[in-house]
Amino acid sequence: MEQNVSPFIGNPGPGLERDLRQSVRARILRAAMPELPEVETTARLVRPRLLGRSVRAARVGWPRTLGGLGTAAFERAVRGAEVRAVGRRAKWVVIELARGGAPAGVLLVHLRMTGRLVVEDAASDAGPWLRVGLALDDGNELRFLDVRKFGRMLYMADPAAHFADLGPEPLGPEFTADWLFGALRERRRALKPLLLDQTFVAGLGNIYVDEALFAAGLHPLRRSDVVTRAQASELHAAIQRILAAAIEREGSSFDTFYRTPEGRPGEYQHLFEVYGRGGEACRRCGALIVRSVVGQRGTHVCPRCQPKPRPRRPS
Image (cartoon, rainbow, N blue to C red; front, side, top):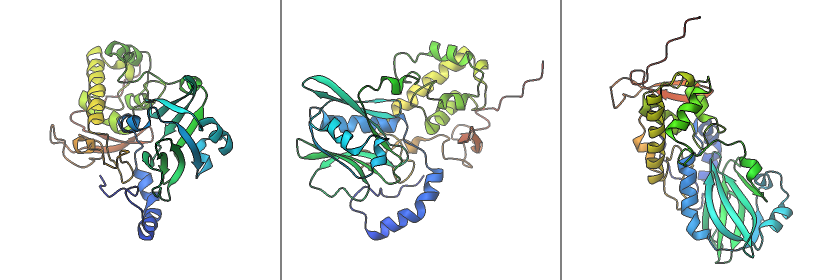
């Protein structure tokens, strides 16, 4: 795991900017995207600095960040609006706006690979990575910084359609052990690609799926419809336990880009059992962790703790 200093801390000089441009392609090829714990951490940390604040003005440094909405239309939509709630749905930060107590749309922020959401003094230098800035009535500015420009800040009058196809939240009340067992049995898919499918469960990503499957002793290629009730219960508990622990430690700094809105790295990467540990010894049994590709995603497995399923004989 890389532990370099984030390019967002301080003002990058010419040397740092040049080095980033030269190495960023290689980093992106192996980088993970922020997942539920990182997005939840972002929402929790910006929330107290945004609630009750009004948007005085907007500036857009990269129009594509708005996802197709024109800059002028975006500015009209957010100017004068008050932030009444900040939350998360799947891998999106959800900022609810209001005017005169009535709903006035939402801002949906997706960090993608290199995005970061911060609240800073509006008079301070935002640096070269500012894509969208919202000036607040207390003299601060909500800033969306993004090195690679893949992130998005979308304005929507009603996000219901945007979220219509998402599965349940893995830390929400609908995600029970019984629900998971039934949903797994209804499908005939390999476990890892299914758990990464946002229409099945919302918010899970590569890191935490690898960790949860290891904790439950399940191979990523095990077919979902043969998972027993006991195994489903163990997987359910592992998913919730690992996500809660990762949120408590402010997510995982899996590369140079992810930092909390307050500039800190996450700490959960120090607790990884399998993710990013290919070729290292399993802490549970001593076997070497194996890295492979499942569903076009880098996947990490202990071959002893997570035995590969045997091919089924033709009936």
